[in-house]
Length: 291
Length: 249
Image (cartoon, rainbow over all chains, first blue to last red; front, side):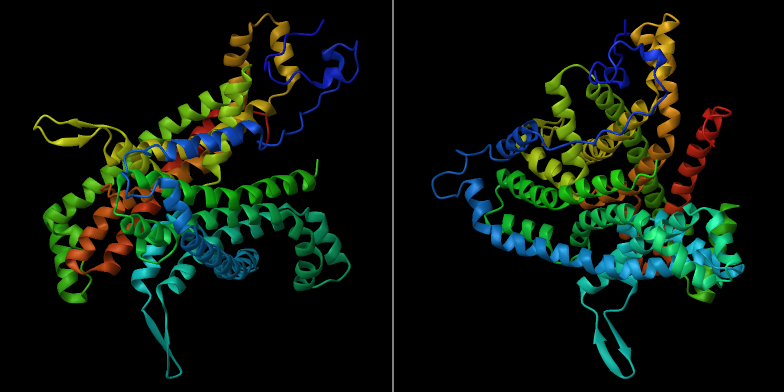
């Protein structure tokens, strides 16, 4: 007799595999993690529901005003351009941040006393300060143009914002690198040392190649976070999707019932972009699971 | 004491040019403290609300109703994969304007929920979606055999859940929970976008009036470093206090 299932949901415990065996007699096993959530028909219903909530004021607009859905369709090309700009900012910030972060992470692992301390402090500061505060920091304190070798290089807002987003990316990537290198067994270092590899050779030829696989899922997580954070650039005046959304709203007469569909459209765009990344990350994590 | 500090910062401004108005101008100081208070209010209320949302969501997700499970799954998926700032705008502008107005005591029209309340609601939902996942993974990490052992000892389903599963699950998911709550505290700065007068908002007001961006920026960085540091310290102490000897590392 098997005990009543305490979860109710998951009737397929380890006992189902061998009928007749008492659950108590089965070997101890941690259950495999179920994928967090799949897109099921219910989700589509939910999205439709959201859309319906977003398009409620059909009749309030009057004859001259466009329906909310028509407004969204009419302005979709412009809003999607803004979204593409968000994606571009996130990609650039990710590229800069990854390169800098790998450097910072290796600095934390370096031998010596001062360099690791400094790198650790920088990582902690940039990780623990809110991203919006960092963005303000860069936007207000970096000049609008710099002079390099007598050439004046203008720094437009979006360049500064990209730089501002790459700072937290850098700190997070540095932590990922450090964690991954720490997770390689010590024996690998010892074996390399006994084969007369120098420290640098050990790091680049033996340790880091093993780490690349472990670093990929958390790195993609950071990317999804930065992609969602790029909308914060609108707060400091960079023209991206949210700024355009507000402008479109004003251009359509500022009707309050347009807010929900327009921001709902932004939500939808980011959802369609970030959800596949999230699923892919989870799939990679399951595949690389070393247990 | 206070007069000495004020005099020192006043002198610092006159001699070195560092204008920390918050530390000698009582008006700026009051604004800064009010902002800090608002950040604490946002932080504490959203942490508590998101914990409740997470616990209820995890309970429903392991419950028998297919409909409720799908609903919780959809909630988690949507809120995890959309930017929190857009969520705040969607709630405050989108849903806030659809709700009917009420008349306040002075006869003025006022929205049912003001910007602070909307910020708390949307930030709690955002962090709650992550908490649902975290709690679920914690509950699933409790071995079935432990539950069976509890049942063999005569625990009812609810008692086994409350006395055996929950304490173990809490300890398993505490590190992930720490991360999420710290993240939530940092996300409260987004309330700035709908003019909630929290620390960032107050500090920005001060620096635009006193023209001391660099100094206030340093104060801002230090403030958040201390706030996050205090939360990390509390959570680590809690983690240590809950640690079971011999369980985990």
